[in-house]
Length: 266
Image (cartoon, rainbow, N blue to C red; front, side, top):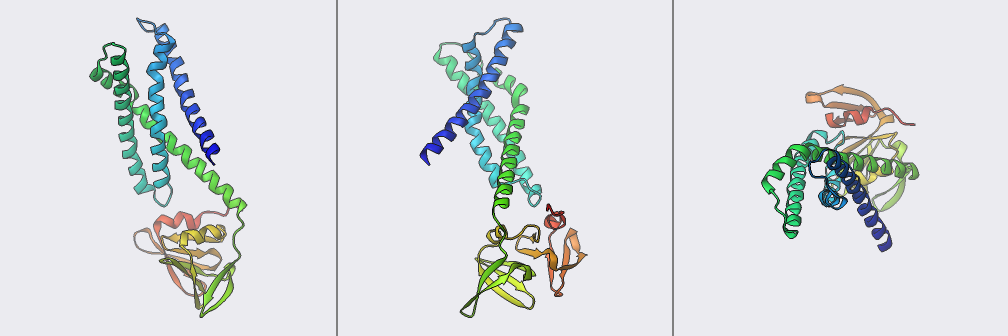
């Protein structure tokens, strides 16, 4: 476990070092061709590497935010604006910190450094790029997690039976017989015809065990068996009412409408 952590840290360090090195090469040749005072390799590395190492540190924060506030269909409206504000804040923080580090490096070498002017110049040149870097990290995290979840789902076989308890007896209920499922604190209620069974599990955990081609989330606290849906009726504010074959009615939230109507991938 420790070796794995070290390898991952080295890869992380190497990745941001590579980006800083590429930026240093670009900066070196730009000053060689266009600058009145051509830079050496040391100056180019000093000017570029600290900024990218800062991004290496800040990327850990961005990764946490990307996983804490996932920009998915269910939460897009809320989480998008959280990330919009986060991208602006972190972009500005990186600029100020990068200019501050350059100020310290120049002071240590006994060279003057116009902090305020450089901050304005870098804000003009790099702020929008910093915002794009933030969103690029979010996109990569989202793509990686989506791919990982898809692979896990392929490996994990959906449960076809669930063990429930009723009046001291334990028995299996076929998932194909379940009409719909609702959350009940630390339990879930399995609605099977005119009977209801309690199962100790959270709705999210149980959803991971079910076949996604058959069971779909319809609101924050309910999952429905698509094979049991008889009719879909429009309701207020974009919501809808799902009428099951048993006659039971459950609410379809507008946030989960696309999830219910998404085509099968099989």
